[in-house]
Length: 236
Image (tube, rainbow, N blue to C red; front, side, top):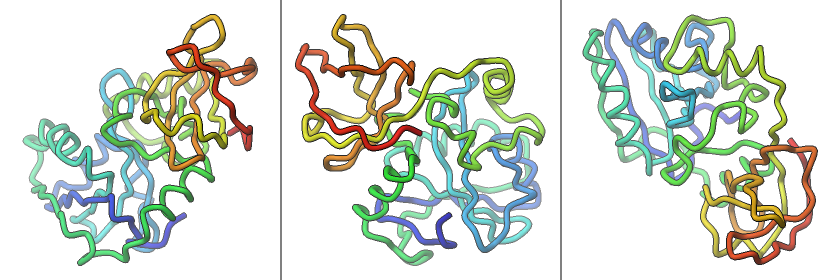
């Protein structure tokens, strides 16, 4: 868990305030905002109707009627526009805070990103938005989803996967310089040129690889057919 309002330079904030803010956000975020407190950043996701993650949110409760949604700046506008479609039904206001340094302690981006990756947490950015479900990234094990709260957008798909599906997917933490030229969200292949997964998050030589079948990993290749040399560090 991160300290209250300890963020990286890559983050921006959407502030939501007004008498209906809790009810409004409770219908869009995956965690139970009634359990949020002012001392810890609560992790949430906003999903589309297919249950795919639009953004990972670090929620800071300012008061009973005011919440800060902290997320990667590359998807701030997309997230804002997504929420705006539902806000019209509630008495609340939203605005973007660009100057995060006035509201939080800023942690070095390299330290933040590396810490997330090494602990098996994939933050969502413009390259990975709407590519993965929460279960693809193991969010069900990271206090991101509350399966006992009421409905939110995408909730039926997420719940069905949790209670009915036998999960084969996983996240593999690897060390490899062969991925330096590849972007997050890029597909990875097996020797038969079938997709075995994607780069979910990476920084320098450490990467989290989403695997479609975590029990059947042998070699990994680029779409060019070039074999990727890597050191396997941990399976999440």
